[in-house]
Amino acid sequence: ETGVTQTPRHLVMGMTNKKSLKCEQHLGHNAMYWYKQSAKKPLELMFVYNFKEQTENNSVPSRFSPECPNSSHLFLHLHTLQPEDSALYLCASSQGGTEDYTFGSGTRLTVV
Amino acid sequence: EDQVTQSPEALRLQEGESSSLNCSYTVSGLRGLFWYRQDPGKGPEFLFTLYSAGEEKEKERLKATLTKKESFLHITAPKPEDSATYLCAVQAGGSTLGRLYFGRGTQLTVWP
Image 1 (cartoon, chains in turn orange, yellow):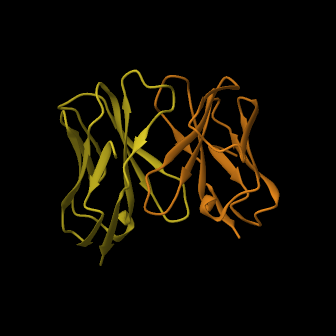
Image 2: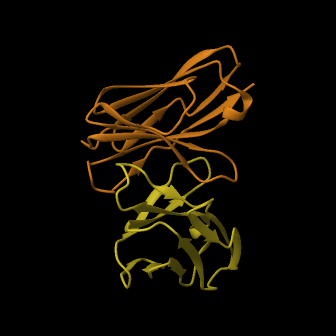
Image 3: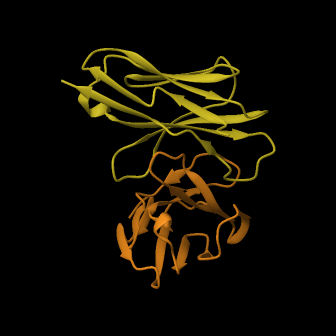
């Protein structure tokens, strides 16, 4: 596989469920990101990981919990979500300070 | 307040009818301006990075230009396969890794 792979592609969950989104990059990049894309809104940066260390948390509610076990994998653990959290969640990676961001295809999340 | 404004919000063109998309920004100390293409249900696909006023880049029917306050994405003789949402993003000087400010996008439809 090449590029940035996200699973699952679609997820429907209840407000009391716990689920996780997975992202894997095969580009040898050392930085990974979670973005949220809601309808009619700009992409919003959620979290930044550089060499497995979280370097930014953009005031994201604690019901979203990221995990980066190594430079190739990134998870977003979800619990007690609200309907307004329904969105497309995009993972991206880049090589350090370069801005050559590569995005995955995203996970379409629906909270019911 | 949006720091990146894209216009128009939506654009319909007939095949072969050239036009331009606009991206204006208000961040100070621009480090880079990015153009992405996003197809429905997919993540953004990188097109161009521009770093300084006066810079231009081309790829097939697309040409991106940059001034001190805005960027244009010119589409020459578009084809139906150019239909997509085009996103503009900027990285400001002094910003942390991964901190891109995105516009809301221009949804382009090219009909035969």
